[in-house]
Length: 489
Ligand code: NAI
Image (cartoon, rainbow, N blue to C red):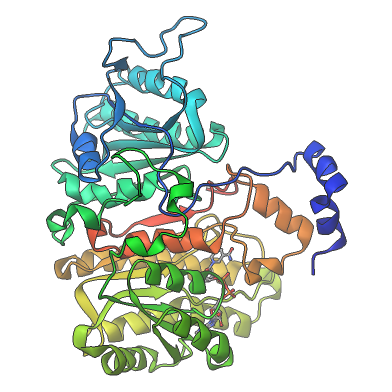
């Protein structure tokens, strides 16, 4: 039950007081497969056509494209005048900036010129997507590469109304098909709580470029290429099934984030195997039935957990094996290190880290019901594993360990076209975080650029972006789903 203070600030008069204390209602975030309502504006700053070609694969013909800070109709964007003319007509839904080839400090002015008017013109839950070179050489180009990161992080902190910005690093000669699943994820509401982040999309030897357009493009009824609306998307989840015919295993699926991962994977067409401890057998079975998947009561710390998962998949779901293995099961046993005994230490490291390594080893040895070539491994880390967190030395160790494991395994498995990635959630509204005392919870919840806690579905959507066959070029990455949490790194 909500505490006294929580009830006070959520009541009518309490809300007014909370607003004055800086606890105003956070913005509503566009979620799901919905594209922005307004046009997607494309700015190519140094002659790259990659973004344009990738948007075309998604069926998105950009509105008002800009080149070098000049609209195609000749309007110069945001000159240095005191009161520049509005550069974009009305609101825009998203600004995609293709900054590949931008290697000089002077060239950064072009980025300022297209970003500045967008800061005002971007609609609520709008998007800025920056594309930059992954590999640069020379001191000035390296400085510019890092400058783009600083700009991305700052824009995230300055945008309002639930709008976000993210930066994608791209190696030279990337096939536009390899970028499409990432652009689609970033523009849609699926990336609602991913803000101020940077990651790399590389070439894929997987199916991405061979996929039919329909496997990548969002299908919004009534959308003519570049437009879509949240309303139009309601109730239409079954239209799009990139995971059809594929088995996805989710540990810790009985509740919280795991239950949402299973639900979103099933929405995307997967046959889901829901794994959790026997004590959670009832909600586990109910969820598996609801999703038309199967339930496996299995403690992930058992030495035979990997073998049992493979045997279950082989017997219940035929010989196809596992496409996606999602290591979500996790626990906390928080105490200051000075009070952390060996039991609290080992419990957390066992469930959150050691179990994943053992299960992966078993599922990767080629056995029936194991992970198929071209498959996906996804782990849940945490911002605590990146920035550390007082009272969580065991948890931070386990989650930082997950990140180390993912980065080491990705290049090892590249030859089998298996990708390995992690999400690092910040504050997500679940039973785990509901136990945090209200005032502390409210501080965690608000201390990010979006002014609110994330929902389990936000983590689930990012995981399902990794799981997509079209995301074969995304590996060894850690994406924070934290609304650009302001604490720590
Ligand atoms: P939760 O406590 O609501 O759910 C965890 C699930 O894992 C439960 O169903 C539990 O029965 C299961 N589980 C625990 N030990 C298990 C074991 N040995 N074998 C099989 N299943 C087991 O947790 P929540 O919030 O949904 O978290 C899910 C994951 O996300 C965890 O790895 C957690 O560390 C991580 N995370 C959560 C954040 C949050 O804000 N809620 C933030 C950062 C990371």
